[in-house]
Image (cartoon, rainbow, N blue to C red; front, side, top):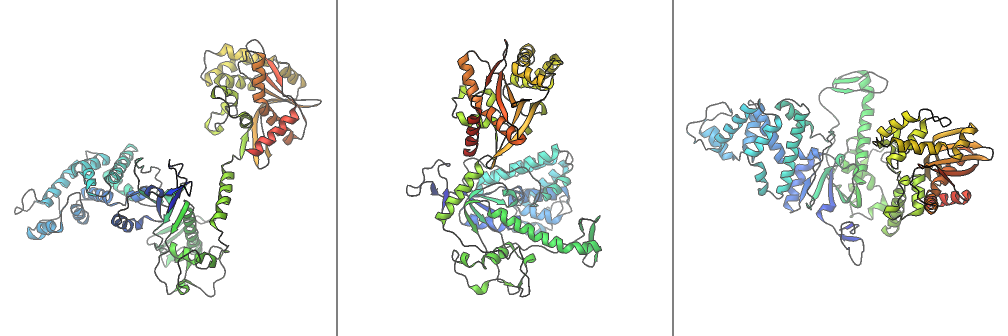
Length: 609
């Protein structure tokens, strides 16, 4: 088997197959729909000598070493729990063999109680006696140490990290243990409570749906197969994905009190099978259907984690009964669809058609499983289509006016990139007063003042300058900001806008070009008899006429994009686009030449991006 995109991994790939290379363990991910099959998977991987690591939090809490630690904490928290006590003594933490336990309990008459007197017939260094003494010591410390400190003490005293050398992957064990200890510290920092509270909280983390945001990060040089739950793999992709553990039997009948909140009622509750509210009886079929839909969604998520190869095991027990979707395993659901797809059979190992699951004869077609079957296409035909779709998906669906201007001049030498075109950070990450205007801090402050003060009289200028300087972190530059603002107020185009009486400031505009949205914020728009005029303030330092022309050329498509969007949205003609370059000694204006040609170029650039 091979993994795609060897160039990303720094490999040269196969000479006959450029871009492909032999697969490594780290290319492979095994996805489990539930954590319950992990204990069956691990010994088989060990027997095959395959390095692996469990990364999902719920999987980590079900590994042997973590279960042993939690079991020891249970024995410390509740000395009357003899099952936990014996299981802890038998674990690698204390290393007591069955012969040691038999010798202690039967031969010497010892009791499974950390407070009981030790049999005189056994030496003090007997492994069971040493284990009981250590657990008694931890019990005495449980009120003085936080759960995280008690867990850390247990790890250090019993040499848990050192035990990793006895296994196939010591670093994997270290990673798991460190993760759980760190989780215990986080529990304590959040005011988690007592040792018993921590044990209950840790038990909840084994739930596949637990909301645990932490992930168990591997070392960068750890070349191992990854094992995750499907829930934990959401949003990720892997070169080779194996769906395993699909024979887990769903538990439809749940014991205990069941509570639901169907739409249109306060609540629905069932105390036992024959004691339930009428609302619950009506809700039950819907609830079971939602269970099926959730299983199908989970299968979809798991199957779409594969980037190059998907391997699905449909090994399942032979069934002699009628196929019932609600009680089917994941493997049976997959086989139910695939076994009815004759074109898919040709790509599978020959199978006796008689082994197909039988469906209820009177069952009506169901859209969830009676899906239309389509022809499988050859890989050489499929790959170009995938490449086309992925290339289209990578293309931005929205383009800012500044992005179009940048694209028309790429590549800029790094020192030549204009600050006025650096407008790509998402607005949601910025304070409200900065949204729509980026560039330099001085430039943002100038735009902020011009957005709020009276353009006719300049009233409120000093207060606005002080506020914007503080907001942008450029206190001490108030005089420069004020001078730039006054130069803009005195610019002929701005005076014309004020005199027209019909002008709009800081206007958001957007339109579509092809299947993309182009958008931007226009500093000033005013109406005159021959059409609308777009005004864009610039605070660039300009030292010569040649430099002014160069900068205006780089901003040309930005202004043309504003004109194109405004014309498309309003249906009015745009007479001209004017850049007002603000300066300490006065503003200088530059108009976009041949605006129609510039707008045509905008359409060309946006369509090509």
